[in-house]
Length: 203
Ligand code: TYD
Image (tube, rainbow, N blue to C red; front, side, top):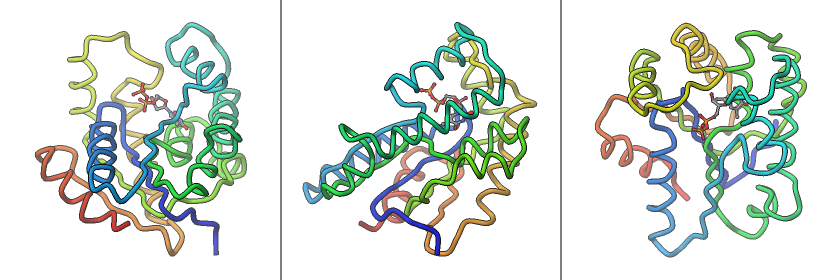
């Protein structure tokens, strides 16, 4: 069986899907019980490789889409295995780790332009125990991104996001046994989504 990291929870979704909000709510709910130490983290990370990725997303640095795929994968290796604040270290210490994005984002986003089997090879990382997909239609995501009024990032385009959503669906349709998967409707009221997610994550 593929490696599965217990007590590791991953949120996935399109930009503007509301996944970060749900990740924050779950992290608060789990921590408030007082039974768990919870680490809330995200990819791209705020460490050196993740910071370089963000400069590409903000059009401050240019590179090729293949190089960007490799940078995401390198940032993920550091995110998992670095000895200071890595996911494995936190899990070993008994924390629950919640990550806003993981390698499914690479398969879905970079999968629009890059070869899927190559992406799987460079992202041969362990699966999390829980995957939560906040599924919001691309058109609604774009409206939310527009409302934020911020500069558009590299992938903030409706045609691109539609392809990304379809990649997410096919990636999630073949998760290995042992990975618990939940799809929530990103247009449902926030509290309803949060309640479903809290009931689902049984740690
Ligand atoms: P995002 O979660 O939107 O970060 P933030 O809300 O802090 O800006 O992620 C940034 C972008 O990176 C988003 O467009 C998705 C994209 N992305 C990939 O293309 N591949 C990946 O492997 C990851 C982790 C993110």
